[in-house]
Length: 185
Image (cartoon, one colour):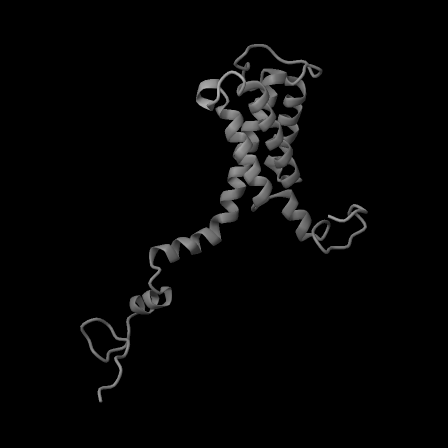
């Protein structure tokens, strides 16, 4: 009865496997998908952080344009008053929420509030004029709404104030500190 085949390099029966063969066998049949999964695990938090920072900056720019004409005058021209409904509170949410998201401070809560404000903007301001975002000018509101909702579920990613506070033991589930809020999280 023949012995079972041994792992060997192609074309050399009984020879020791090459490093390439060992690597291929360790990856299994996954190959490229296995490598992508490893990359996703390693780089995922950094990609989330980059997304959080970019969307936070863009959101901050929308708010600062509404109040201060910075970085440039808004599309509809002129600035808005703090008491003007809904533009004034929306600009405050955009400035404060955008800054919090860029810093990664209270990311989940800030993202949820920002997402809700964009859902309100879409359904109250844009959607009554036409159904589809391309028709009613609500693409920004729709994209911001869904991006912030995603961040509310994924969290801040790498390089955030939330992560720094959690590592220092100031916040986080199951942590006791004199600086934490008296209510459960």
